[in-house]
Length: 262
Image: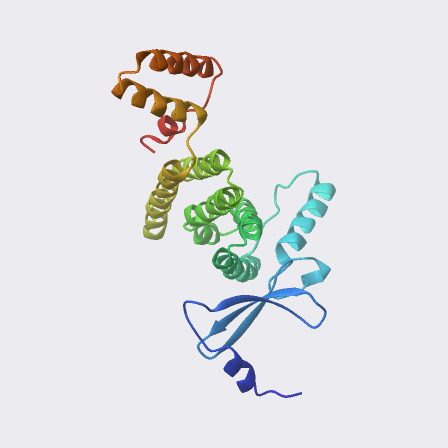
């Protein structure tokens, strides 16, 4: 085995603006690599990012979820089940691996996997919030909940934008805004910052979608109506008004109104 990786590093010079790539291993399996100033990190695409299977489970989270189910079957309730400080620390370290990976998925525009990993960590947050013995272990995660909800909503929205599904994209962003706004306030500087920043970013995204999405049929007709009025073509204007009224008989979601004030 050769331990010197100098040749590997020379073949991929460090560039902080272009330092993430997908590769295939010797078995043809896809992986992610990130070029660091002095080395390379490699992540599995699926499963736990480091490829490990703790206790033969996909992750520690799945292992402790399974333990909870065994406990509930034996006790008939989850009352009394708790995650110790040591267990929470191990789950936190594992959660960081998924965090590192989903930020890479965001850079690579792999939005489906971004949504998958953020959803996985949201479920991890929920699990610790419910079962951690120490309140401090719960708060260590809750301060970052606005951020992870934002990333999850962005992933969903961007995935729909790629498919030109602008109304669905807007709905995903709005759901993220609502979820963040509904979070109970915490006397925590990180939480306050992340909540404000996440709301601002998602609102900006919603505005951008509204500005860039193709005009609806009604909006196209309204534009033509304005042109007809300016040209004093009143017969044409009357026809366009009738068509607009026909469209209005079928209820439509007014996205501009929904986003106003968010």
